[in-house]
Length: 91
Image (cartoon, rainbow, N blue to C red; front, side):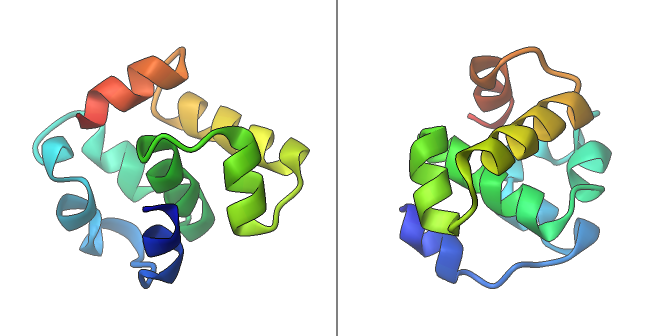
């Protein structure tokens, strides 16, 4: 759940990427995800759980505009064009 993501301790860099995102192991996106900061990873997890920007905003206590900026930065960092493409990388 979204709350589970918020309560889960954040791991840094590659130390927990394979554990958090097992489908990425060995993929070209692995290093890109490993370069994301803790807040980016938190928001990525919420996106993958199906949360809308509004739900992410409420869960993280960030403004909707800030959430949109994070989502855009994640899409750019992973070189994907859409939220659905992003989700397909992980599922």
